[in-house]
Amino acid sequence: MAADSHSMSAGRKIVTDNKDWGTPAKYVAAVRDFFNGEIDLDPCSNEWSIVNALVEYRLPKQDGLKASWKFKRIYVNPPYGLDRKSGTGIKSCLNRCAYAHDCYGAEVLALVPVATNTGHWKKYVFGKARSICFLADTRLKFLVNGEHGGKGAPMSCAMIYWGQDHDRFKAVFGSSELCFRWKN
Image (cartoon, rainbow, N blue to C red; front, top):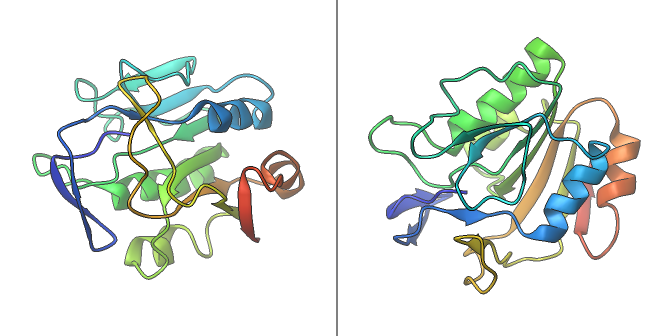
């Protein structure tokens, strides 16, 4: 995840100079398990990422929103704030997740902040995604520059799934260690 230095997410101000917040290892392991060991695309990667997808668009040099998402297995941990230069944000990433599934048949997992009251959740998650796992780690500690020890996220997070195999998603993410609540 890359956070803008003074950005907003679900009405909350995120203040950080760090732009390389990574997915914690236990969630990367679950994503890999779900995709049978291979992640084809990580469109929001960075130099510290431990995701190791076959194709990575690395922020900030490569804008994953402008590149192709025509891949079978996609994992997204998008920037949670707004990129003032491009005018894009999490809404744009959620749109691309839904689009990649609808247009290419991609199986897409996205780790995002819970913001059920926002237009982007209403438009691209509810009615589009197959399943949602509200994470048990209510203040998820992202990797900072590839290292443990970062502060907890200021909001709850969820793993959202656009795809057809809800049973597999539930089997992988259904442990109480990973998931607090289900929506399917």
